[in-house]
Length: 228
Ligand SMILES: Nc1ncnc2c1ncn2[C@@H]1O[C@H](COP(=O)(O)OP(=O)(O)O)[C@@H](O)[C@H]1O
Ligand SMILES: [Mg+2]
Image (tube, rainbow, N blue to C red; front, side, top):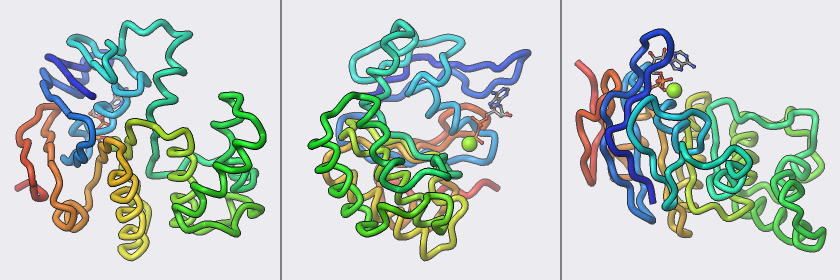
């Protein structure tokens, strides 16, 4: 599903974000990416959906060498990958419905299909009844649930989450973690960068730990690695 072969990423002029990373993530896995701030977690995720390309090495996602996909075909890759961020990245002036329907509109799904799928994913994240609310007026936890609904509305094979609970209190973070676990149980491969030791230790999934751009631990089931 995801394979990195000798992947390094150096930002100009010489900031090494990832260094000789070799890893395979199989279909249906749930992987936590951990490591201190600056360890390379976001860069790792950005390489998977072609937000960035590696300086060297190969990134294979869903059988394709991501750096070699022609620009015009990148949207097809991204349709198979849901992504959520710490800061939600919603269209805050738009309604919950508009935010979640957006990927379906862009991919030209018929109105009947949109009218069926939007409520279905809103129900999955516990937000039925919020369709007409503006996204920006919701609480942080609710906004992240909208972002999750939007990320899964195209039934992606892969869900990437970059510190999705970073701005949330513990109780709300737990709800988001449970929803991501639920998305995983429904068949998506999940890669989640996080600083939350208790979420990592509660879910007992694979843990890939980065330090200065290198993988220094890769364990299943893993526990949160506290840096000295
Ligand atoms: N767009 C960028 N340009 C230059 N340096 C960057 C960029 N993005 C990240 N970096 C640097 O690369 C390193 C890894 O960053 P990042 O992947 O964001 O780590 P993390 O998500 O683990 O905090 C850091 O030193 C960071 O400053
Ligand atoms: Mg980051």
